Length: 219
Ligand SMILES: *Cc1c(COP(=O)(O)O)cnc(C)c1O
Figure 1 (cartoon, rainbow, N blue to C red):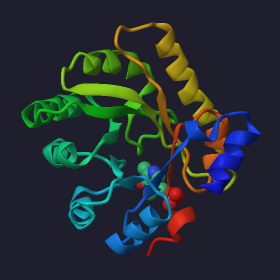
Figure 2: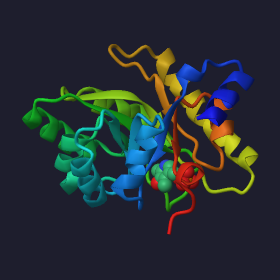
Figure 3: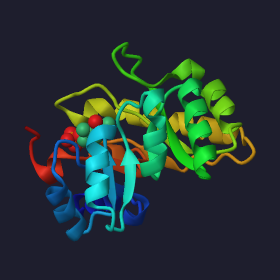
Figure 4: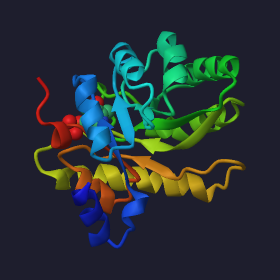
């Protein structure tokens, strides 16, 4: 958290503009509790099954839960039940299912649209050529609120090589904002992980998703 503050200050941003998502995948509830005790207020999880056990164990903790893994439509109802923000919506079909579950639960589900900036076939996310139309279709759902965009660049040892992908996501957001679509405000940019979050913050990240740098290597 100190490094987040320093990275924000270095590029003239307020540390309050950048929030840490403590990524708990593979770690037991006790480890997550220790992170909460140390000041973490957002927990990120990748797998519904694993998240459910921790969510139940930490039901009284006052934290936000964010889903950052790949979400299958048939798990949408669990995601809607547990998560304050779903970072990884990558199709109108998935959004439709989230909308249906959220309506049933009497909730407006906050989401981010995952964008496949690098156009790697192996990566999830909406293709850049389809982001605008996908966003407009999802924006029409009554029980979903789109809060911003998320991306995962390819893995590089040198974080500088990830910078163009972060800059591209921010550019996309600005381009969409310029269209002034009624009721749509894309304030959040979820980008940056342990190896490259400082670069992501310089390029405008508002949510950095960090596991290893907090908890050590996963088993
Ligand atoms: C695991 C994971 C992270 C955290 O990665 P670290 O390199 O351990 O910080 C961030 N985002 C997503 C989508 C992840 O799956």
